[in-house]
Image (cartoon, rainbow, N blue to C red; front, side, top):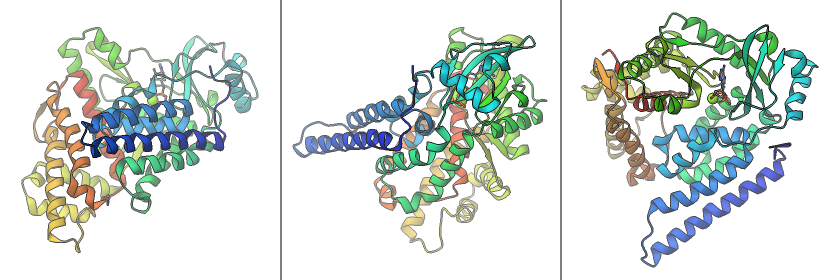
Length: 430
Ligand SMILES: Nc1ncnc2c1ncn2[C@@H]1O[C@H](COP(=O)(O)OP(=O)(O)O)[C@@H](O)[C@H]1O
Ligand SMILES: [Mg+2]
């Protein structure tokens, strides 16, 4: 039980410096072993570093944990050992004490939660990454109340500065080249601490997607919400893992998968704004009515500018894949290829992007796609690993393309991962 978060910048910095050192030491051990010709697999190294980093991250909690989750989603950008460690992040966090929960309500409403609601359970039902979720009741309605840890918003920026050197070392990149990308991530993370924004976005997307079948969205209560408190209806259902233990039929899994696919395509194509956190913790599933899916957590929403939307769709279009000249033109427009690139560099990027798009675009090129074949997702992750390991690409040390693509890619890789776990066959509709 936490009475206090280690929010002091010095304490956090000290904790991180230690991890940095240990990660460094693991590298030294690794290369020392290699130097004397001993067997030292890169996997061992990654596993050691990942456990080290995870230990630190779960102690720091808050926004750092969010960064960890984000990295977990970017499985295709991370060696598997990191991804496994980071995937734990959502579920293993100590709860806040009662007095801190009451204080959050006093700060927001000048009242205790017992005065605000008819019933309020002070022990949290669910841990969240930067808060926790309580069960409450008012006027007979069962409610979910997300309470944010104090001090999270204030510490995001310093957290990012702490994570940055480690992340850069893992990726082998330098600050100036990744600045726009880090800024994009920082902006999304800061937005995530604003529950008033989450409420508006949840209401808006929920309203505009209300016609889509087999989906459910929370009803939010603005009068019972604030910047760090979010009140909505308690939705029934189970997380994906538990739901799958009930052995739902293929029909149910297909219906749920289709609902999920339609939800994302509608957001992309019609709203130009997407729920950009398709983490399994953000959906509640149930078998009723042939399969119903509740969508939670509009804390991370990516708004897609018109030109980025068009590029994304064109890049994934089947026609582009079959037409190298068109691909080259689009990649130039996307600033992935630059006019002054050497022919070798051009060829390298073209080859890489062609292979990536072949894979990522595959579900879009057929009328139906069977995510039940786990080989697809494996290939997608393996592509990420290969790109990370490619000596030619590593030599470039220069990420390219619009920062807007970070959350778009993450959204679709996350969606594909969910559909693969569901083993759903989806009408993807090319
Ligand atoms: N309206 C709700 N009804 C039922 N459970 C909820 C609801 N909102 C959140 N939860 C539970 O709390 C968990 C964390 O909530 P979430 O909004 O995803 O937090 P975070 O933004 O920190 O990721 C969810 O995985 C879910 O189990
Ligand atoms: Mg969540």
